[in-house]
Length: 295
Image (tube, rainbow, N blue to C red; front, side, top):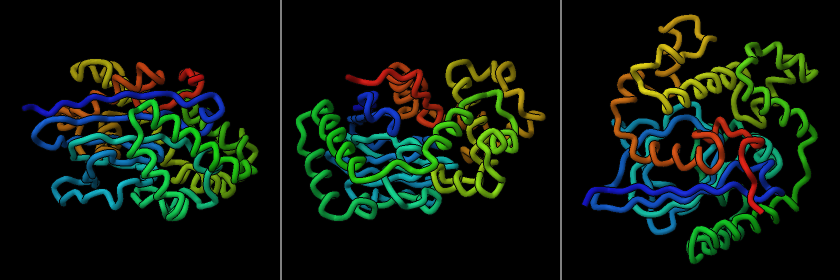
């Protein structure tokens, strides 16, 4: 039997939508594990409900099993290859959510996958993981996750730079923003203050954040239109075609032609379902104003 991928997304309730992008559940059925390449993302918490998935930046060098049943995947600047069968539940963490949930700076967790117990302690991890795994369905898992997240937020204080993190997140989503200096000046920060805030809340230095966001916007356009038309929607901020190709290799590890030759069973299912539920095909392009929070 051929493998089949089904995915469902749900936007968090209004009180949590500032901090978290979506809840999602993916189910892969069939005889053989599905392999796919995922582009850069913000952070996620994921748990395998009935199986472990293997992950890694390069399938040729080998993928490794998830280090635990429930993991924190930090933000990424490159591809994540995923292979597996079964059901996985997850939730996306926006930069403001990271800075509100934990005192840990984001940068040390960028491009890493760790057991969630490293962030919340063993007892809290074990209870949350067990509750999610034993829940009846997606709706029950969302209810449990919302309750757990609300409890976690109640134990922390808003970051003193929350208003600046919110503004920076909005500016990264603005295609008219071109220069790092323009952003820092708008936020009233010196270059060094701006760089520290980016690394702490977003995981990466400012120039990399802006490059990654620009490239992901273009990838979103590429997914909605035929590859043969890509020259019509190449981001105008690119100096030339070679500039765009370099970013493609930096952020996805391959050329556009190699990428679009892949079958992309997981990514095709998730981008369609996510766009329908939250307004954007990729978590990294998430716009809280375009998503409609749950009740």
